[in-house]
Structure formats: structure tokens, C-alpha cells
Amino acid sequence: MKFKIAIAADHAGFQMKESLKSYLQGQGYEVLDFGCSSEEKCDYPDFAEKAAKAVSEGKADRGVLVCGTGIGMCMSANKVKKVRAAVLRSFDDARLSREHNNANIACLGARVSAVHQAQSLLETFLKTSFEGGRHGPRVQKVDSLLK
Image (cartoon, rainbow, N blue to C red; front, top):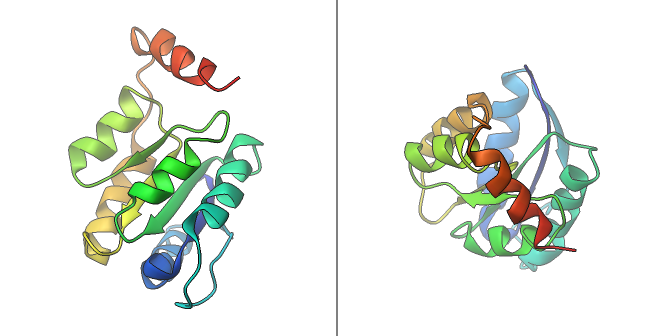
């Protein structure tokens, strides 16, 4: 299944975002780009919010956020209702964030991961399904924290 993907970055993640956007489009995904549009200094919460809201409101099925480490984008995105963002640094992070936590936004760090690694992590993230079962009630509790 090919998803509609919201993507965004700050200045530190701009180049990686552009590479990931091309990669995703080449894989047949529809990509909605919420900025930024250059390496000019900008604030990651502004762009995280736009992409996270697209996921939260159902305008996109998944999201990809890129900053220097992925952490700032992740913290910002998780302030938006119905968003479960995860920083991806390993294949276990990518797989388990989907299987156990039903993460819907992948956060990547341009200063800590190479583009080819980010592509592989993203591929794992997008192809992994939520297991449900015992994890379902836990995810519901997480979603209920933002009222």
C-alpha cells in the first residue's frame, strides 16, 4: 500500500528532506512538502506543526520530519493530537515504533544519519504494520494524553 506522506524539515534537515522526497516519489508515494524551502535558518516547530497537523487531520497517512537530530521535530510533532512521532536511528526503532506504538511520523536527523541510512530506515518504517493486540490499549492511552 502506498501512502500519502507529509514531509518537512528545518534548515539543518533541508538537504536530507529533498533527498528523501525524491526517494519517496521514486517509490510511488505521493509527497506533500510542508517546507522549509532552503538552508536559511528557520525554526523546526513551525514546520513540524504543519506536517503533523496534516497527519492528524487525515490529509496525509504518514509523516517524515528532518532536523539536525530528529529530536526537536519529534518533540514538536508529539504535541499535536493523534500524532505518534518517533526518532529513528536503528532498524529496531523503525520496526518497533510501528509494530508496538503505531507511530505515524518518522523523525530523522541529518547530522546523525547518512541519507542512504535514512532511506532504509524510512523504508522499514513505511512497510511495517501495527501489530495491534496487547499494544492497542497502550496506544489508545498514549492518544488520550492530549485532550
